[in-house]
Image 1 (cartoon, rainbow, N blue to C red):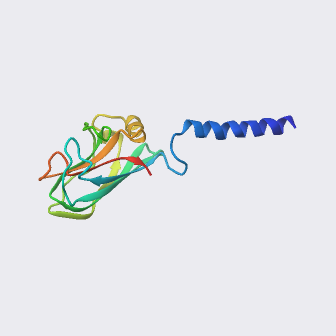
Image 2 (cartoon, rainbow, N blue to C red):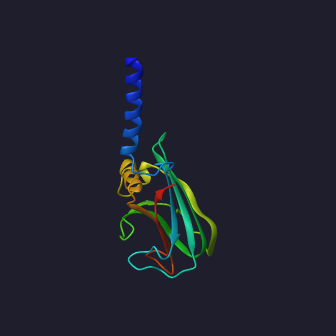
Image 3 (spheres, rainbow, N blue to C red):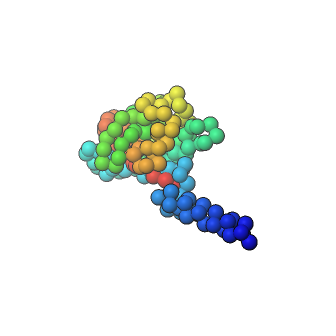
Length: 159
């Protein structure tokens, strides 16, 4: 009887403790993130553009790396794509390059995909980048010839 009570109490503490420790809604994976990329999200000045896109970033615990894919439509003359550190209303430093070689002309589909390892990071460690992404303090930005500071941008959020 005592063992059953202790087991039940322990289960309740684990459930309550787990939900109290997590401020994420149920069903979200704290290692999978997405960003909707728009010109309106650009900072400090929103960009008027027909371009849009999405970015997905997944943290892989087994090898402490991130995989990513960025897709776009109506985007022309891309020069770079990065993960930056910063809140939604801020501009911040580059944490990781996402685009090795910019494709010529228009992009309608996958812009880039790959893996980010510790050696690829500019100013962060894998752990610090993960923490900043999980807390909403990182964004993806795609730069073009017409908008060198960024044409489409989106904050990474849990998927």
